[in-house]
Image (cartoon, rainbow, N blue to C red; front, side):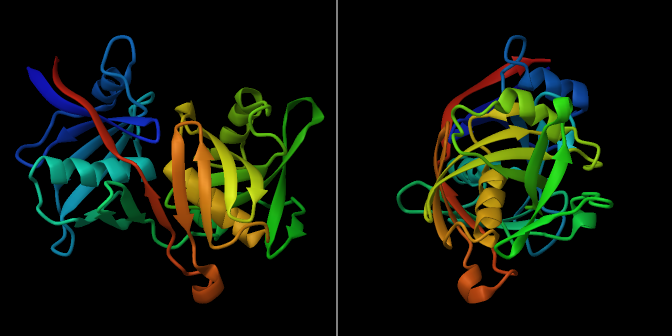
Length: 289
């Protein structure tokens, strides 16, 4: 059997995109790991699957599988931008605004005239039970209008993190120099910390001004990636609530620039987060299974 695929990238976060709108695909964790393997497969951070909508008020079902573990995950913002570019370029829809359903959310994706894509990421989630995060017995430090939670790490170290969900869990830590910070050492400890029952995406945020930051993210199962769309959203939300950032922020990742807007100053904590960034096709092909 041969499986057709499209390789795409958004700010360096790369994907294998599969079309399952006409017939179901024989997807399992092993196949997703093979597709994601950079030596024996195609190579990708995530596997994205386009499926028919299961509800009348959306256009497609959007499924995301981790390229390293094969596990289905809740959300991928950079992947959402590639999703709308894919369905538009492949003639699956003729509109520039696409509504999709994910494992636990609904998103509106908008293709802009300049080729970039804006994703309505919905409102951030702060309830610890919904991340989930166990803060019992910990004493948070208040900063701005938010809390920083101390996580005990190896060798007596502590990471102070702000916790937020964008449909998937994030722990955001402010650092002075993100390029020099030991993401490879600290990232895995935060990602697999027992306070997070389903693990967590670990973000490392350097604030350059109230409207500009640098960010690195150590993602669940994937390790550090060149960019993380939900991580950028979570970092801006956390920085805003900590009193460090304005409503519109340019986020510099190692893979490119993302613009995040969270109009909390006018709409409050329930304001939706808007993410705008690139989405590009790299190549198309087929793989023998």
